[in-house]
Length: 518
Image 1 (tube, rainbow, N blue to C red):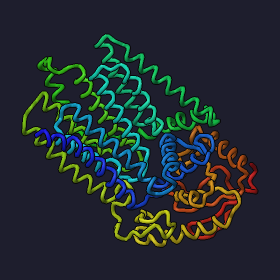
Image 2: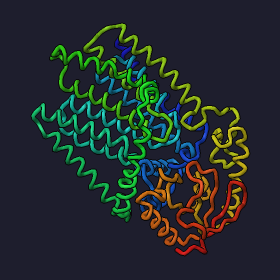
Image 3: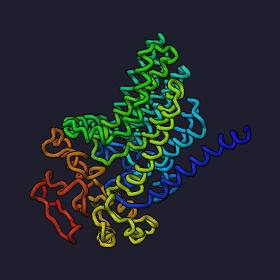
Image 4: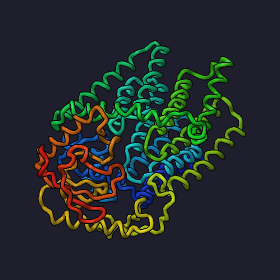
């Protein structure tokens, strides 16, 4: 038995490592959604070469992920392998962390492995490449895990590090990080009050101040104006808040309840046990267990709310194994009924298999659900550095070769034009492989969601930012390669009728702004 235990102790983490890395490396090479697939690829390369967010281009999210990608490129080279590996490493981190946190809560090695295996299958393989929602979800869950360990051990020094994880998460994406910050902060204050010991709060505040100091120093070091960071990362996204709420309402039963029924079911037993213990005044359940259960319940609801407000495909199915795992732990400790545990495991296996096939294998997150992946072609026809990518997109589902021809045609013209120019495209790998800075004024082109539309109160600030960057970089020529997923007429609402277009093809044209009064 001791030999078997030792085998599991080392074998299970090794299997999780190999599986979580390899499955994401596999799916990271299948299918392309240009606006998402190449976003961090380009911005990581830009940051590596001294072009910074907020300062050199407009951005509303994920500077921390860009920094990480720049480090991956620095260490492993600017390749698709190192790009996908970035996502794979985070898939491994959340999977192995889940395994160890479940073992910490005395769940058996076999069950901890099962739940973690499902997490690995459902988390990053949906996208395959680095993406803000996935990084943020992972960092938020890691923050919760650290919160659990901190209140279980009452280790004052752990409180110092929680603001760092939440800070990195916030610099990946503001929401749902803000919700998790509120949840952890509220429950932490309850914990401090109950224990009548606020030393942990002191260490949390110190950790927060240190994180803010490091971030502020970084802005000063990179000569990034604080006002640009505030406007782009805080104020403009907040101006979209009321509009995003429109996507939550009206409260439709099918969209809000049935679509996330397994999520609700995964926390049902946590709610049930809390109510049962409260009614029976069960003193066996400690304040720590109550706060952990509440944090899981609130987190589930927060992520569902966030998913309803996002424009991306559903990505939170990976949370189901985590919530089921803790439901299993709480049932084992406070309602030890074998049929309930069998029900939890059975639902986990059925739902994980279903969501894996529907959202991972079919590449639904990449908008390829109804696309025949077998028609994909090797992306080495664009550039050998994209070798082994099965290239197919939602724009050319039947003829990916036509899309590649359009890209190659544009690349040839861009390569021959050695002058300074702005490149507007969702195929952002082009400037990377040309080893040219694209001088794009925004990190991604998506009207209204990515930068202010003309009706937005921040439009004047955006317009001034665009003109300032064009003048600063002495740009007179702008190339546009379509399709653009979120923009039909880039820059036209800023420059109006003074723009002159030279059409090269149905998908590629050049804008001359030399006649514009800027």
